[in-house]
Length: 183
Image (cartoon, rainbow, N blue to C red; front, side):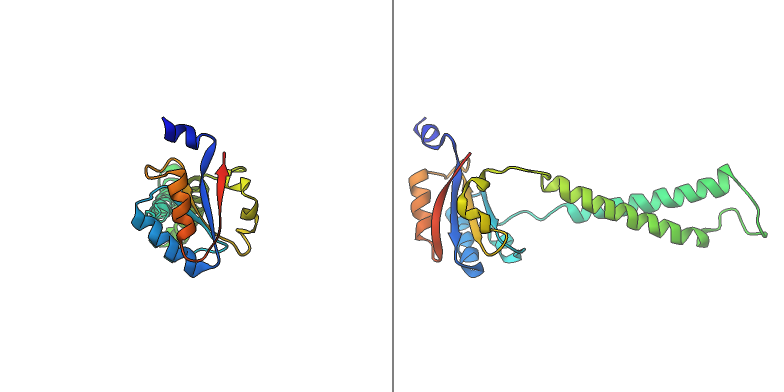
């Protein structure tokens, strides 16, 4: 009960780091300490940070592959249906199912469906559009897209304790400041 009262209205704690090496080292220590509801914010993608936070691999590549296969099957199926079943026209003595002529349009529908799946899948998996997130309440977070490196631990983490987590974050090498994230 006291932990609930202590964290009501609190989304979590956010540590600002000096640079990329410091945030990766800090993320490794946070993960080793047992925190799981953690997220990192950097101005550019950092695979080392994803590995340090032990984030699961994205399912997006599998979705894109599925979208591409579906596009290929639908494109080829449409061509087959239109040329063989719906409008069978013998032009120049060629066979109705002339698969070499079906390849290029089927490839194009493969690309179209794969690209569409990539865009829509990325938006859905990232939870976009998301016009508001509690981390926007931290004033220094405004520079996250330019030159800021931030690590946030959510209050819903089982190991989260406001005072202990704050002390732990402040003890990490390269931390500039630790801020509370209000909901």
